[in-house]
Image (cartoon, rainbow, N blue to C red; front, side, top):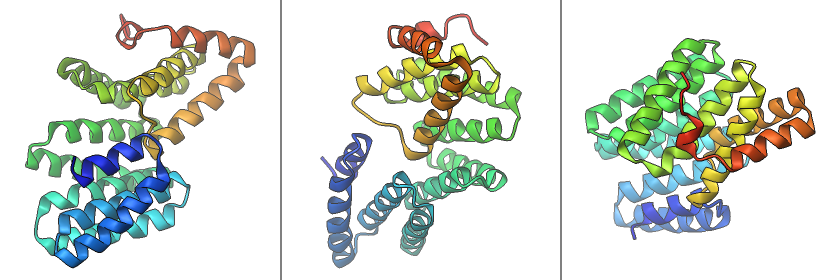
Length: 241
């Protein structure tokens, strides 16, 4: 298994200490070996760790260093992950207009490179930006298109994210029962693939969970959440939008 596969798997499992030790070792190895791909991946991974820990400034500095290494290499493919994380930082910091521009630029890069999975991921992130900008119709459209791609292509690792998207949309629309149910679906979907949400998605999930709990109260929230835990993701979307 490549360093990229190992470090990304560890990150998705929430093994932060392992990600840090692996990445620091890889930076030393890759720098000495003149391997920009390895160095970019490692610096990108450390940026994600900082973001997960709530340190956006450090995350941004690390991502910018990764982008610098990528640009110096002359290999445009290496720019994609640093650009992705910089967009995520803008989104989490509330700079939504900048985040929208960065996600659109990242989509263009991934389309140019022929990476449909990454294109879908960035459209998902763009939809969240549109949602936070209050453009519910546009967010709803993007979420629905993404869901169709995920289920149509069988991208199992992305199923929890389309469930999270529906939870967030439910909360934005004031349908907190729907939001609570979809939080239950989302939590089980993440557990089934043995992963935890990426930092920006984790923040969105926490916000939806808190809003639904406050709106419904503990008893009603728990009932809807429990229904969601028993609902298959595909079934959860039957007949909506």
